[in-house]
Image (cartoon, rainbow, N blue to C red; front, side, top):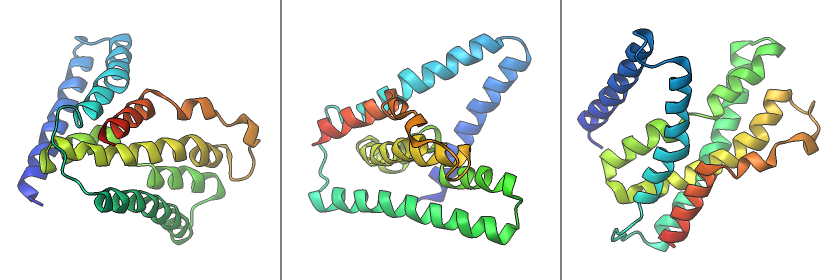
Length: 181
């Protein structure tokens, strides 16, 4: 892995965020415009980026490599869940803070930062592997994440918004995975 590529991509992302912030502060982009841009990124650009990672590409990944990635997705989230519990104990957080900090540790922003980084490091065809993580992320954040936000064990499981699990990001990942398969 080339640290220079990562640094360059992080700088690009930082400059893009800084430009957006400056445009908002200067009044070039209104609050409503910022919401529209965020919506376009989440609902149009990221899904297109995910699907474009598998379209018209010669993908040479073996079944073993895909299986290994799926296992790593599960391990990744299990480790984050366990580490978040350990971190909360070590930090001596108040009961009101524990779940908030655990949410921040378990659910990093995989799409916004992950897709461009993987794309620049490993090429467009590797974006499919990010899709596996995004599907796992969505399944967990809209189930376990909401349970944490509601307070561990305090929420009625019937109240979980299962329909939100099947959002545009999950749909794009599913389409990319089907095209890949």
